[in-house]
Image 1 (cartoon, rainbow, N blue to C red):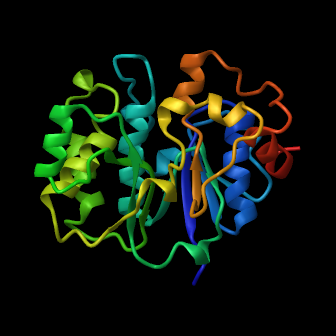
Image 2 (cartoon, rainbow, N blue to C red):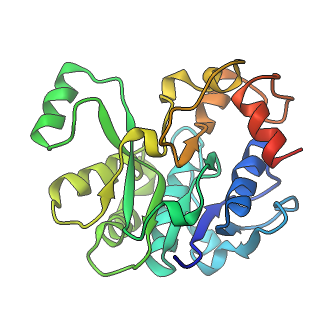
Length: 255
């Protein structure tokens, strides 16, 4: 299998240790790692290529969601870069655990477990999605961009959506899940949660920094759920506890 290009976005400024672990893991796993930035990125891991994000979307299109987050702009950017360049997208809070040869040639989406409520469970049965599982956009593989595929449709929708009304996840997981559910012949493999989201989001970041935690077999990627770190008030640059998964990752990809 040829080298897989993985795209990441860091809008501006320096990476924290968490993001450096993420990008470095892809470099060390053998991915051609590209970090797109609008400026100020001065500590990219050795082996990662930093490119001007303006070549994908002009800086004038940057926007923030109602919470002030750039996550919604990141959703738009990932569709744009995958639709024009192809390859893989990985959020900067995703760690590569497997090399490119292990992921296979087919395009794919990933899923995560969710805290299902009765009404959501009914909706998922109607949409052919197993109860308690939903599409997440943290890792996407679109090796051969084509008009009308899932990523092309998501990009068209995300470009047109009124940015002042966007809420968390609306252009990311919720949009991909909606398109995937009404497009049965989309041709993308939809992986089980263990593939890229082996831990539940509501367990993070505590499960990642508690000593003695183990990864389930079958994980090709590990989602660190950066937003849960922010909400928990945990410093991503602080030294990680000995014996924790984050300490093990830091010793492998950071120190």
